[in-house]
Image (cartoon, rainbow, N blue to C red):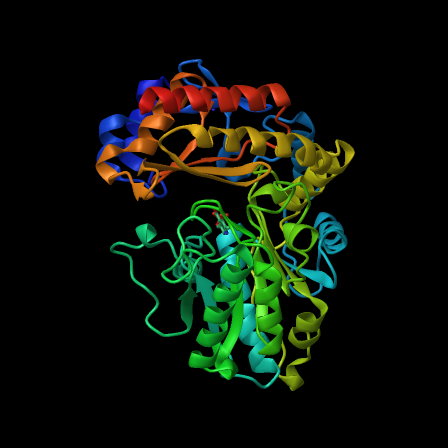
Length: 456
Ligand code: PLP
């Protein structure tokens, strides 16, 4: 590639590159940071400054940056066979091996994999697949999906509509029908009216009752699926109260509703297991959505891993209503699947899940120790998926006004000290590569504490 000066890059960037989720007015005023290098848990920008990557790219570079083995796996597959379509009877080796491996890693009878290009496309495809499933099994009215306020499920049309973060909507349209519905987020810190003083168990019951009442109100025969992240990510790192996911699944089973676990962030080791639903929450979903950590961000890939029950229906012959007519040019792309296989091999060989169980627990404890600071309202999350919410008044949980730009200022201070964190509203998120050491974890928390103290 031809080389360009940082100024030339900035010119091309601001004039031509449409950045995701960006306020273009401030972006053009303030400029962008060009990230030019990445190795292990660190990134380097065009000025040569290094930072601890406290967000693993965007909760995805799970095995760390710059692994030569990953580059070789990708290059080898390109040289061997970069692409041929998998439609109908042709296939490719990495796609087949990876599907079998995902079936082995996923809990219970989640044995069948539909590949996509990322998380959003996996969500959209899943909803289409579920509608098809209900048509084939003679329940064409069962189409409604229940999601949650503050959920994040992506940026394609359906995924964006399932998303419950209102700040992502503003002037964007909603799908003009009633088949996407939202219930309350499972937010222990900011609870819905009437649930403020309940115990965790009572709060779970409160949310479950709300869910069941919504199903009854919509008509159980019209509700196809419930979708939830095991821990809400972009919505503010919200950990559900004890027993929540299992109890929600029980309601789904009662009304013949599928449970979709969106493990785009929580999967692939972030919470110390390949998938969190069963291992941590003792809940067997009908579908798991995976992306991000599946290739540790080295190349795009998404997957919907579906149960035997669903597969038996969608794989029926055309004469019985089947014929699975959906898929992408890049479904099961061999290069992406090779990268995923190498990523899994590295995770298993280096016992990365076990490492997260230890260092992640330490990181969680360290982040939670920030609770003594006067502007820290809540520290929450699990292992290497943590969030800190800042408040102007701790007793009343009064949020900082947007103009205070608290998380932006914190982000800038942390960056000055060599740490990248992620600002979301009044929350700072930290989700470092899973290979983070104890020493790096100490650096991250100490730097974060100093930045909070200086920003107060
Ligand atoms: N689901 C969750 C929980 C996510 O956090 C994201 C992205 O951040 C998505 C889905 C969408 O994934 P992608 O950005 O790969 O389309």
